[in-house]
Image 1 (cartoon, one colour):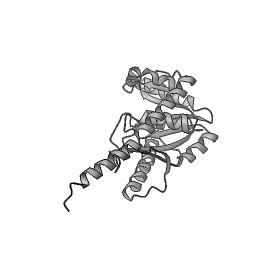
Image 2: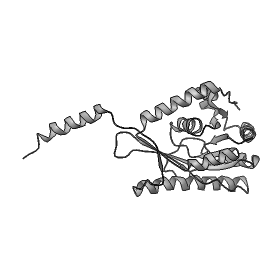
Image 3: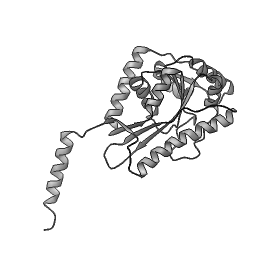
Image 4: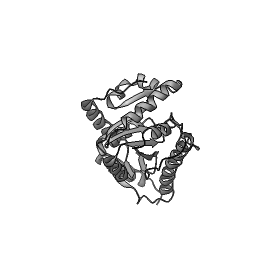
Length: 246
């Protein structure tokens, strides 16, 4: 297992940079249920389980945990990826070799050990790798369930992430947080419960998009088009309108 080597100064700078990149890239950022997560963090440590669908996921995690929630956050990462991107250690990532069961057991114990106080958060992607957001079943591995069993004082919160191209030049980002899970049972049953909970949040995003009804979501960020964009569009409209048959 590769331990985190968290740096407060580097974390603050990198979280700011992640937020800047997200604001520059996404036209809108919609969130739902973050107040539930914030309330849980004020009371107890939190284990977040989430789908893993994009290169953007760790940047979104850092923006949410550091810039929005101000949590003392850590995240489990594949050791091979962490060796390629070692700077993630400085923002709280710790690495696990998923092909080594003993290393997996060490990572589970370490994650549970981190969940020792309110305000502390560990984020796990139980799918273990990026998968399409439409893939079903999600295919959760049992590691996050094992962490939940070893840290019974922690709250388990499911979160769904989705990136959507709509009728605008820039994509939209959706984050949906579910209610804390009532944990109990075997690792297999706990993993299944976590997977169902994240699936429900993905379905909630899908239903909102299908019905064109986003009232349940708060708009965390909206990027307005620049004046140059508007001027270019207006000129194109005027130029092409002249060619229309009368």
